Length: 119
Image (cartoon, rainbow, N blue to C red; front, top):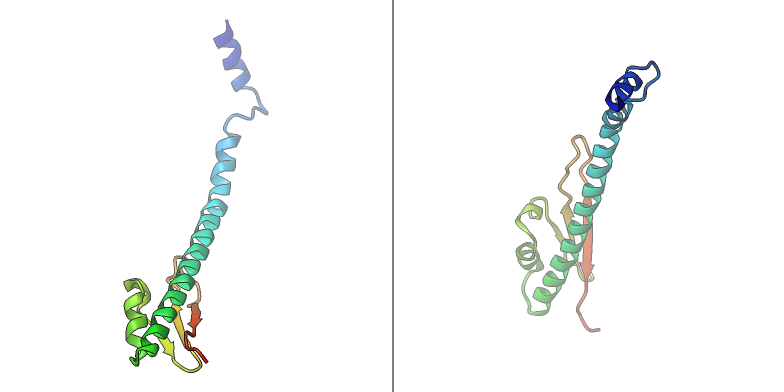
């Protein structure tokens, strides 16, 4: 008896059966875009952290009388080495290109700097 009553209820006009699935499908692009944006922000943060580490390595190289670019490049992960910019005026400044996840996203650079010189 309960099964038949449930069948009658599901077939009623105005039934909400299936509306949750449609709402999920409709919100899926927004959820996916939000996850991609959050991941892109996390990647930019990791690139910024790595740029700071590379700048510190470059500053240590300057203290030993070596050029900072080689030390900074070796301190970076392979994926961040393309487009590396190293400046040695008033400390060491390292710029790296942030890898993009979102198609069409503009190229972005982050910079880290360090100065270990005593003055």
